[in-house]
Length: 616
Image: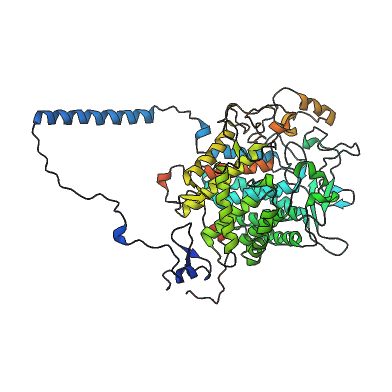
């Protein structure tokens, strides 16, 4: 096959595309050599898109009736035009935001929640005015003297957990890598990059490589305490604004058995490096540390779950208890492959993927959240297969990922009856767990993202067993979950604070529930926890935990299973919102056929073709 364009050296075909695609190596071009590409149709067999011309001989037999016909036709046309113009100019100016696909305003609000969760010295331009500097001694604990300023408070408490922070950075980075055009069109690109950098800067501080035998490689997994075994004041027992904290802030330390935490941290830093690829020095630093953290995670001597050891994750067991680490190794290896182009990371992901699937807990199957990255890894590897297939020996794993993704979409659409819906239409991915909205949000993101991948391939439907689904079905499912969150539910409640007229007023959140007029001690803060009044500070953009399985919601500050927001939950919301946002605002004014998604940018660092190869 001769070269027709200097930029395309190999081509291949996969069933999902139904056409020839650029290939990253000669492995895939064997499909062309053996005639396995999609069969072309003879030109004559393709139905014409145009009707054939036919001659008619028209004779007017009654001129009076003909003139009457012309007159009535003109009147009808005039009436139709008048109706169209009136509907355009006299339409209500206030439309229902819940059903609009222009999500720019709610994206801005959802991002503001992360500004409200920032710890450390805040920038002068921080968007949340009831917050101030806090946690200014974080990292000083007993014999530990490190700089752990910054990062995010996880939820309504004042603890900084490493695992959900890293997950949040990874998910937000992924959304920017895919949809940076949409963020830019909304005027939010700089805002979300600032949020990601706030998180990645902190994660860089939490990893300290070994300097000598007496100082082993260390990951700091948590700042703040959940345990009051010694009857000391903790971030859980004390209802107090972080600005007012005076109690000790313990630091949890991991020197081994933290593959899950390290794998997610590597994924966060690697994905963030792609977000900041134009800031060369910072991007390189992120990649270098990501590789070091991943090496620690992948070292067989260290492999284990961070919550299995007391010093590392004991404090997190009741909040972010890990059920495994293999999914994080796949996740971290995949993102490092995209960030570096180093094929060894893809090889690691390939070797671990099958074992991760087999070890996955039944309750987590099909659920993408801070504890399970396999559904997202399957979608990400399917993207690689469809749009930049590396060929053998990765074909089997990537095809397995593709099959998993199709089954995942069928499960979301209830085609296989794996998951049920509430009467109001919210998918119940973990029906025995509280906070259902975080799971629905990530399902909305993955389904819309997969919709966009298939749209790039011009593939408008897939199958899973005897069932099939269309792109419109994926779009409708994704929209339905986000619209439920924004108020299209039996409670008519927007579960995003500040959006719409009816939203939670007693959010379980220390900063939002206590006035900023003076310092309040732990004892004084307790009365604000028990107060029946609305929060004095509006926690704009926070997605609360959500309703019960029968769509009921109780707006009570002391019921966190309904009213507590988290950074990991909001990350899924932001990703889903930007994926669904109409791009551009006026589609007819743009030549962008991909609807705001960047199909190739994620592959910028991948160069799999050896320099000595030549085109076949």
